[in-house]
Image (tube, rainbow, N blue to C red):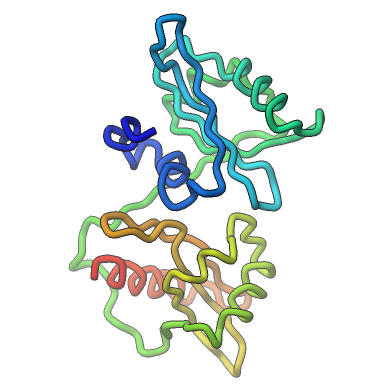
Length: 212
């Protein structure tokens, strides 16, 4: 795992990178090897979420994802009707699609990166840094927005939001927050307040904070 961490492309495998770093305490990793001990790929399972969260890291084309799923099922004693969620890049999807049985049609997820720092919108005083007194509001808002990947552990990372008449109407935080890498997440705005730029401004403050 240390060898993988030292060589992994975070932007191509950002989900598994999070399993190797700040989510590692809640993750179980299973490796598939050749008879000569060469790593073919890894399948990991993240505990503690309200759904079955997996991450896959193929190393060789001969990696058998279906066999690894069967092995993980036996090791974790998962129910036979378990449906899991996984994020893979397009190249991996082409290689693994024949081994997957889709419960729903795959959805495209865009991974965006701030590269033009001068293009960030200016600071807006309505965007507030949300400390511990706001944690209950944040948890409630995450439930309202259906942000199923949110965990209470992420409240220890900075959150920003917009308050309107004592109501939290927009919010954003991080999924990963380390010395050299931050991943924004848990971002959402109430339906009645959308299309007013709150999400963009919150992301801008999270980006500034992350760079600091």
